[in-house]
Length: 82
Image 1 (tube, rainbow, N blue to C red):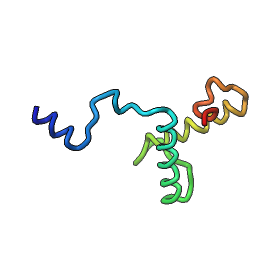
Image 2: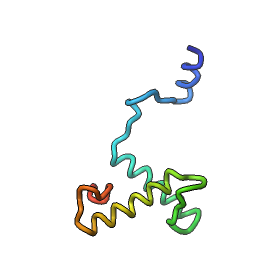
Image 3: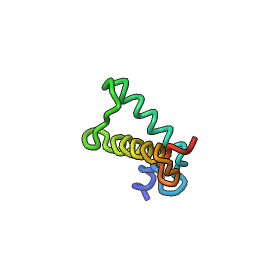
Image 4: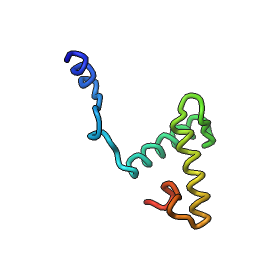
């Protein structure tokens, strides 16, 4: 019980109540990308290193863009959503 209280005291989330929408998640990742660009001067985020999640997201956005440009809206990975 003490371990549970300790985790909860720092805002630990146990499950589905912490699930965020795709739109919210996209906005959060976009904000991370903007910060990365401010620090590094570019948006070529590596998929390994300090922030592999951001690198994977950036790669996914590029792939989605290619699908979007090809007219495949079912697999455009966020490029078709606002």
